[in-house]
Every structure is written in structure tokens, then in C-alpha cells.
Image (cartoon, rainbow, N blue to C red; front, side, top):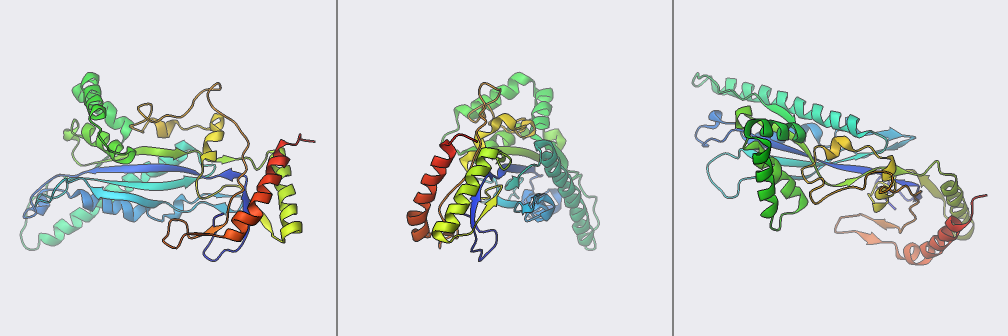
Length: 337
């Protein structure tokens, strides 16, 4: 069980699981020497603006029947210099965890794209202001630092237009053949980086892409058998153990239950812009491959997930929970009446 807020002492059962997309923003600036900073555009300057706009942005919070998704938060950010030097970083990446319940891939993708465009505008405006501030010492003509925003799909198309589909495929295949120990996040970033080298004429870029893992949102709150099961366990918890158990429609901690209702999912805006899709990462598609299974989540009780103080409530998790799980299984196996 997850707390809805710090100090939450309530008990919950879940009739669904929240969805998650890992949105990546690849920033390509213009390299320069630190002694001539206005001759370039630092990618860390670019990615910092993206982080400012997106981190804990409540405009991304989605409310469904009183339940609210946590806002986006950053899971990885770094420039891509391999060693120290006095050349400014000209590539950087930021990956954000973004959660959803009923929001479509089209809507969420659109929000992320608009945030990237807003960041591009702010980067240009901030750089113009800093340039003007410095020009009080010496007037000069600023370089062109207009930032273009692309999706991964658009980047791939532009690279193919400039260098040919065969060359793009050669570069991508070579990267896969020499992947080494790179994880999905770093390797997705590498693919994007390789393709940007074919689009140098575009100047500074922000490329929106997606990396595994992707978790579709699922909910069985309207399933009559799931509701019947929940009410039975809720009653047993109160009468036998004195526990008030509430229904939550979307488990906020992410779970593999997400993959049990793929038949209902529309994920094209994510997969089209995912460098690893169908190249090491895939989702079942089509009626014969995709599952549709009603879900319910009855789990242990703990505190402080992913903190050094993370701990399990032993009396509930090893005493009460096994009994409730057994009752849940029996209830699920009963024929609906």
C-alpha cells in the first residue's frame, strides 16, 4: 500500500494501476570554448530550462473521481561529455517520469511537446537577455541560437531526407551492434544523439523521445466481479480485523498489472517516438496477442518506499495479508451471481 500523503494511516485495495511514460528531452546546443561563451549555446543551460518548466508541474496532474496523479519528476539528467575539458557541453539529456490515468497518448504527447516549445522560447529569451547584459562591456553581433523542437519521429525523417534511409539504418544498426552494456535509457539517448549528427543544419535542437519502460494505465473499477470481490474483502477486513479498507482505482506505485489490459490501449504517439520500439522493446498488439484481464491489487503495508528508511509492517504483511489474499482468491474464483 502507498500513502496518499505523508502520515497517511489508511488501508487501501486497488482496482487498477497508474500508467507511466518516461519522456526524454535531448538537447543539442553549440559547442564553444569557455573563454568565448557567447559563441555557443550550452546544452546544460538548455536542459535546465526544461527541468524548471516540467519538474513538479501541476498542470500535468490528472484528476479522476477524486484521485490525482503525482506531478512529473526528473529521473535522470546529465550532459554527454565523456571527459573533462574547457569545451562547453553541447549535448545533454533529461528524462522525466510522467504518470497518467485516463489521459490519452495524444493529449499527453501534445502537452510534453508544448512544454518543449515553451522551453525553446525561454532559452532564446534568456540568452538574449544575458547577451544584452554582457554587451554593456563590449558590443557584438550575437550568433543565431534559434532552438528547433522535434519529435524523434520528425528527427528520423529529417535525417533520412538529408542522408538517405539506407544511411540512417546503417547508423542505427551499427549502434545496436556496438551497444555493449548500455541500458535502455542511455542507449535510447545514444540513438537520438547519432541521428542529430545527420541534422547539423538544424542548429540547436530539443528532441522529444520516449524510453522504456512504459506502463499503460489500467482500471477494473467498473467490473462487477472485481467490485463484488472488493466489497467482500472490505467486509472481512472490518469484521475480522477491525480495519477500514478503502478502494483506490489506480495504484500509484506502478505494477505489472499495467500489461493485463493492452487490448484497450492506444499508444501510437509513444511507440512512434521510441527509438527502441520493436528493436529490443515491444508491446503485444492486435486482438490475438493483447490481453484483457480484470485486475485487483491486494498487497503488503509499508513505509517510505525507495528511501533508506523503507520498511515493511510485519504484523499486517505476514499476519493479516495472507488471510485476505486467500479470501480474495476464493472470491475471484466464485462464479458471478
